[in-house]
Length: 242
Image (cartoon, rainbow, N blue to C red; front, side):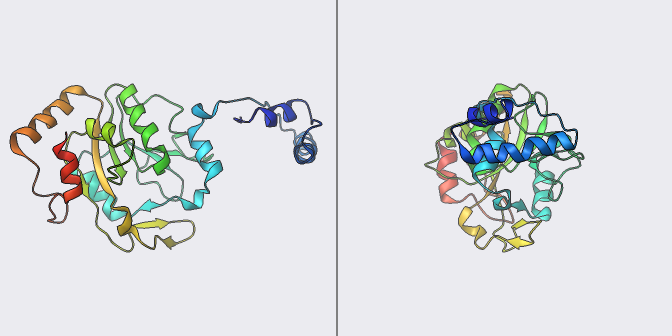
């Protein structure tokens, strides 16, 4: 599957006349498939329906980060443990059931946007470029609960939607040097503190969101978030808008 119509046409027609590089590549791939009895069925998929693959094609998987497992377990203890790790791989999944970014026989499913989320409790630490898509998907499915890892960027276009889905106060993640890691490279993020990552508890159940909104208005902001810290000024201001 590809969101590039030219690529699909070249595979389907065993080559073409407009792109020399694609013709050369097709001339390598198709004979190999024939020799190895591999059947190719080229199919066009619009980019909007292939979001995860689109992100991976523009940004190397090696640039994705994994949350420290101790911090992740703490998030799961604060709220109910999710059922499924929505954006993960074999080397870094935080839950037994996970959805892989890449082909993986051990994964529960592949591509987080390729199946319905109804009634699921999910853990999501997506690429930041997919946060808007994740939030929209929560609103489109009934009975969804989610523990989302994301930064509190006030100017982000997805912040209003994020706040509207909250059912608890966000938790500030510790700014450990080892907070974020690339498991397959054993590399740590050089400056995790600059991301100001938070854990956000979301729900598509309107009654749960309304109860939290009333709580914010009646009792004000919570005085404790994580490790004895109060709600930071920036996040506190955002919550005051709920």
